[in-house]
Image (spheres, rainbow, N blue to C red):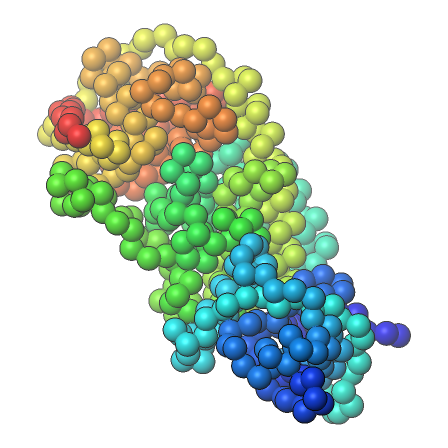
Length: 448
């Protein structure tokens, strides 16, 4: 039976360098290693273009070439007869290859030397196996159809966004066996991602943020494609330190104190998969491992299936939450007066950053929501609230489309649980919640 590119996908991981043979216009041959061979589809591969080398010159003069790839587990070698079509220097394919090349470069000690100039797309005209002795094939992938079916059934049982996110991380751990993972949601206003849940880390990192295009996670979100790294890499880790608005505006040190991402100090394998509802970005699923090559194409396919299912359910839950949200809650005072030392809370109007005492808590829309709840408690004694009244409050500055209010409330609720247990958000029904304040409040607003 003829070989297919689909069956050779493990050969395109970069664990074993590929070899390319080209020929100049005058017939002079040239053979060299190539950093990355990327599976595009059943008929095409893309090769990394990094240097203006003899290989590059030959391909432009004579578009036919031969590429030999190696299956890293069995040692089997395969010969691809290819024909050069075009070079892409932007877009999803380029970004995915750029991220993978960073991992290969870091593993080889060549960070800063390996720089992707473009993705050369080739049509594969034939595939043949090179004769030789091979090792026994590895066991079947862990993420199979039966496992996916069970996972998707558990996800379908979620009745709100919080339980959906928790269910996703639960099924990754059992039955799939992914111990370290996190879910980030997308904020279209700030074009950034914020962590709402994680598993397997000493610190949850809830509230940690990064911008689109930043690091492995931000790149996967921006390009709307899955990206895997099979080796340790600092260039595409959790993202660079973000600029602190406080210092630039002279407000106060630490105003933009960045919540650190959780992470494995010796992470060797990483995968980031966008969570989409059709083509609308909802968030990103990220996982990592200390084992090299932990995530292959089979795991990538499985993650994409789960992420697509989560995206579809999240979109339905979002629509349902908007249509069934409560009207206005009646003012209702807390059953017990707050006790203990006063809780000092500051809000910086520049970006709605909230500090409790001297500690940074949260910012942005979630910060604006918290400030509204604090004022309502202090001025009116209110504890009962609805999502609808938050959506209609112009001071919170929710976007007109896809406000993702439920995700922001999840973020706020979990951040309070971790950093400020004297303030609590408790869900009381569909589109309704209670805000409990256990200590007296002292509020202060810092102008722009």
